Length: 294
Image 1: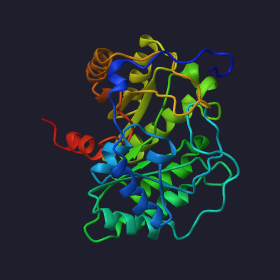
Image 2 (image 1 turned 180 degrees about the vertical axis):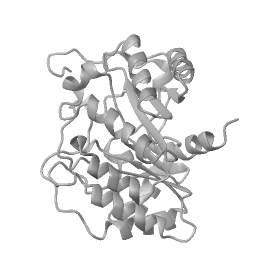
Image 3 (image 1 turned 90 degrees about the vertical axis):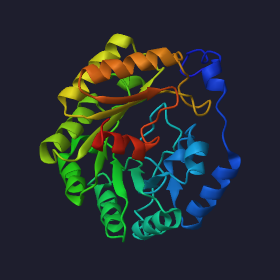
């Protein structure tokens, strides 16, 4: 199989092949989510950790619909012309949070470049609704770049999430290949804005490897994240979700992920790196580790 003239990905190494998905846990949480009309990025993006996370009763909620206005070549979320925002979505989200008895909720969204605020109002409504719950969980948002519109970023900051996450995703050289509608500069500007406007709010970002980046390029990204005021970085192996997405260029060895963790920590970053690490994987544990360092 090829993509854009490239050859298929190499054979899965043994540290990737051993991953199992627990179907019983998947079906249970999917039933609860879809009963309320909600979706998770875990399912839409075919995350390899969804069985484990669902088995622990956790999930990352996908708001602002399920159709993205962008078509990033690494992502399997549907793209096209989305529907108007659902005004009932915040209530549905709160119902799911209560039903799952969540202590830490992650809220993310498709890109909504069709909307004047890029979908920021959806984040604000959901954050405020969850915050109003009795025994409200800690709240993490994973936002788009809003095409560099800092007004949208400011609105979400004012809503008061505990963690503001925006993924840089890859190195600058590969943006045209895998994130055509995004800009590396916008990603750094979002994180720097949060650091400037809300210094007590945890800033977080995520990076994929295996798309053709070099070790030196990743070092540059870590340095840029540190300068932007990011505090927590997740680094994981890109895995081609379907044949329609760009193939894996290479699989990074677990020892290389350990080296990336060390490199990030030398810059003052808290880094979680590994083949199956994803931006929202065990998000509550990462949040608590920052709050309560050993």
